[in-house]
Length: 565
Image (tube, rainbow, N blue to C red; front, side):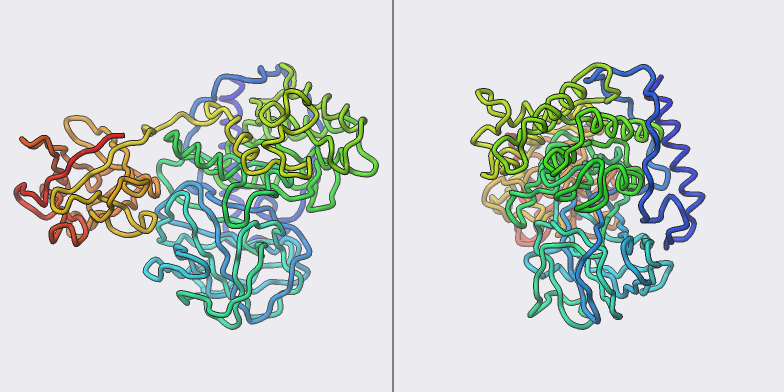
């Protein structure tokens, strides 16, 4: 009953927000969508506390406005200034979608910000994009938007296919002096800056690079199968410090891969800020200050993980007590529950050996870990980052294999261990089968069918082995009918244009275009008959051209070996 009540409250909050927002540009005075800091609410009694590891919550209804976040960063003050320059920023998606929108933040600007000629495209490598996927983005139907100081702007919906677990380039032109940018300092991603308006260019020749994000804070998608988003709120461990540049090995990225592999369609929104604290501002606003904007305000949010913020409080010159930090955590739990969100607590990772370690801080860490592990904490679940990463022989230190070397941050293996410690049953149950799936080997040429370019190009029998791009989940639709979900991007294969165009993996739900009759042939091969037009799928031109459903009978080009692994 408690969880059902939270879902109702969350739905009410979302409905009110939708009614209140109206315009896509928000100024500080507009409340829920403004990017201004919000003062922490006073602590409230939690009532009857659930167990630390409760049963998973039932699936909640779809998000009120149909949008779910697939990528995000938390805004900070003090970024560089720009003038008559194009920014091309690379974001790593979690879930895919059939439409996209972006959020531009001027949360810490001192003057209005003008942004023009925004484009979305699938990134190929470096600053280069697949120009065939390029889409212009508008704001209220206009190609230019002015964002008030302290505010943000959300774009119109763009008809842009977003592949899951892929790189999307967001390009924007800044025609006027911006002043110090609202930015996210620790991007751990190479982004690009070029002179003039070159947002639509395939490659930014001669561009300089940066490891930060400026003005861009969100990429959202529409996906009918989306089950919500989880926000990971934290500091440098969450932000991915000690993971390699451009590797997308932050632990929230690792979690996104685990969720996708499990058959769940849950967005993972990284709201870590390196150096961030729970109680006091410094490297970004404190978790208490930024909670409403960076957690409750995220599109489609249903869960929040509080990660490593308190470690920085403990490492400061005049650290708060464990009791003070526990009080701060209780405030966040209460505010999450008031908004209808499930709150997942984390134990704090070890940090002895780092410059900020003290015995008093260690005692406070132990108190916090005991609190979140306790049955009366109010947490809706526990991620035991401490147990996942500490050395059993020296519990106040990292396991050497997980230590990045500074005794404060885990390396990539340690980050993966944190992601692996997340109990996926806390989230919505799988709606699609996971597993390694199937591959199809064409009799036409002996090659495996693949979804090339991360699923952005049409299916073709061109692969010599069954790698990730050549693997598909066979989704049983009953009565001998199946659909195929590509591992390349997590999208459903469709007989595009009612079968008149080649097969491509770009759908989020199964309809008649995505349904095929699986036919067993006398030689034990299979053929696929598209339900939308009654035609057989062929490896056109002996496999040299894309797969298309346009044949009336089965011959060698329409025969495939179904390979399981």
